[in-house]
Amino acid sequence: MDNLDILGADGGRLAMAFATGCAACFAFLRTVFTTPLRQRIRQLDDALEADRRRCADMEVRLVQRVQFLEGFVLSMSQGNLRQDMQKVLSEQWLDEHQFHRGTEE
Image (cartoon, rainbow, N blue to C red; front, side, top):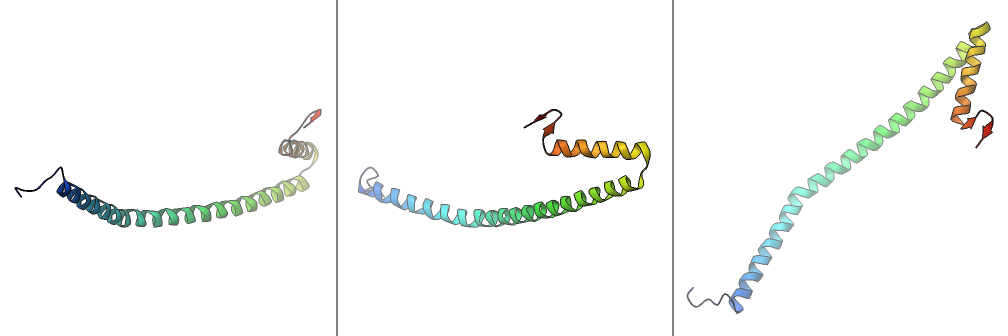
Protein backbone atom coordinates (compact mmCIF):
# COMPACT_ATOMS: atom_id res chain seq x y z
CA MET A 1 0.00 0.00 0.00
CA ASP A 2 2.92 2.33 0.63
CA ASN A 3 4.12 2.36 -2.95
CA LEU A 4 0.62 2.95 -4.44
CA ASP A 5 0.67 5.96 -6.79
CA ILE A 6 -2.87 7.36 -6.59
CA LEU A 7 -2.16 10.23 -8.96
CA GLY A 8 -0.51 7.96 -11.51
CA ALA A 9 -1.32 4.68 -13.22
CA ASP A 10 -2.61 3.06 -10.04
CA GLY A 11 -5.10 5.90 -9.61
CA GLY A 12 -6.37 5.33 -13.14
CA ARG A 13 -6.87 1.63 -12.44
CA LEU A 14 -8.73 2.42 -9.23
CA ALA A 15 -10.95 4.93 -11.04
CA MET A 16 -11.76 2.37 -13.75
CA ALA A 17 -12.57 -0.27 -11.12
CA PHE A 18 -14.84 2.19 -9.32
CA ALA A 19 -16.58 3.20 -12.58
CA THR A 20 -17.10 -0.45 -13.51
CA GLY A 21 -18.70 -1.11 -10.11
CA CYS A 22 -20.90 1.96 -10.47
CA ALA A 23 -22.03 0.91 -13.95
CA ALA A 24 -22.81 -2.62 -12.78
CA CYS A 25 -24.71 -1.30 -9.76
CA PHE A 26 -26.68 1.11 -11.92
CA ALA A 27 -27.61 -1.65 -14.40
CA PHE A 28 -28.67 -3.93 -11.55
CA LEU A 29 -30.79 -1.29 -9.83
CA ARG A 30 -32.34 -0.21 -13.10
CA THR A 31 -33.34 -3.77 -13.89
CA VAL A 32 -34.63 -4.49 -10.40
CA PHE A 33 -36.64 -1.30 -9.92
CA THR A 34 -37.70 0.01 -13.33
CA THR A 35 -38.82 -3.21 -15.02
CA PRO A 36 -41.66 -3.86 -12.53
CA LEU A 37 -42.61 -0.19 -12.67
CA ARG A 38 -42.80 -0.25 -16.46
CA GLN A 39 -44.93 -3.38 -16.33
CA ARG A 40 -47.27 -1.73 -13.84
CA ILE A 41 -47.51 1.38 -16.03
CA ARG A 42 -48.40 -0.83 -19.00
CA GLN A 43 -51.09 -2.57 -16.93
CA LEU A 44 -52.55 0.76 -15.83
CA ASP A 45 -52.53 2.08 -19.41
CA ASP A 46 -54.39 -1.03 -20.58
CA ALA A 47 -56.93 -0.69 -17.76
CA LEU A 48 -57.41 2.99 -18.58
CA GLU A 49 -58.01 2.20 -22.26
CA ALA A 50 -60.53 -0.50 -21.31
CA ASP A 51 -62.34 1.96 -19.02
CA ARG A 52 -62.44 4.57 -21.78
CA ARG A 53 -63.93 2.05 -24.23
CA ARG A 54 -66.48 0.94 -21.63
CA CYS A 55 -67.46 4.55 -20.90
CA ALA A 56 -67.77 5.38 -24.60
CA ASP A 57 -70.02 2.36 -25.12
CA MET A 58 -72.10 3.32 -22.10
CA GLU A 59 -72.41 6.89 -23.38
CA VAL A 60 -73.75 5.63 -26.72
CA ARG A 61 -76.30 3.43 -24.95
CA LEU A 62 -77.37 6.27 -22.65
CA VAL A 63 -77.80 8.71 -25.53
CA GLN A 64 -79.92 6.15 -27.38
CA ARG A 65 -81.98 5.57 -24.25
CA VAL A 66 -82.54 9.31 -23.72
CA GLN A 67 -83.59 9.70 -27.35
CA PHE A 68 -86.01 6.80 -26.99
CA LEU A 69 -87.51 8.23 -23.81
CA GLU A 70 -87.79 11.72 -25.34
CA GLY A 71 -89.64 10.23 -28.29
CA PHE A 72 -91.87 8.24 -25.98
CA VAL A 73 -92.74 11.28 -23.84
CA LEU A 74 -93.26 13.37 -26.97
CA SER A 75 -95.63 10.81 -28.47
CA MET A 76 -97.57 10.39 -25.22
CA SER A 77 -97.86 14.08 -24.34
CA GLN A 78 -100.65 16.38 -25.42
CA GLY A 79 -101.20 20.07 -25.97
CA ASN A 80 -98.74 22.57 -24.54
CA LEU A 81 -96.42 19.93 -23.13
CA ARG A 82 -95.93 18.47 -26.61
CA GLN A 83 -95.18 21.91 -28.09
CA ASP A 84 -92.76 22.68 -25.27
CA MET A 85 -91.00 19.33 -25.75
CA GLN A 86 -90.64 19.93 -29.48
CA LYS A 87 -89.25 23.40 -28.80
CA VAL A 88 -86.67 22.08 -26.31
CA LEU A 89 -85.61 19.26 -28.62
CA SER A 90 -85.24 21.69 -31.51
CA GLU A 91 -83.11 24.02 -29.41
CA GLN A 92 -80.93 21.12 -28.28
CA TRP A 93 -80.44 20.02 -31.87
CA LEU A 94 -79.48 23.55 -32.87
CA ASP A 95 -77.01 23.79 -29.98
CA GLU A 96 -75.44 20.45 -30.91
CA HIS A 97 -75.04 21.50 -34.53
CA GLN A 98 -73.77 24.96 -33.58
CA PHE A 99 -76.51 26.93 -35.26
CA HIS A 100 -77.55 30.12 -33.59
CA ARG A 101 -80.71 32.09 -34.08
CA GLY A 102 -80.44 34.11 -37.26
CA THR A 103 -76.81 33.16 -37.98
CA GLU A 104 -75.16 30.04 -39.30
CA GLU A 105 -71.49 29.34 -38.75
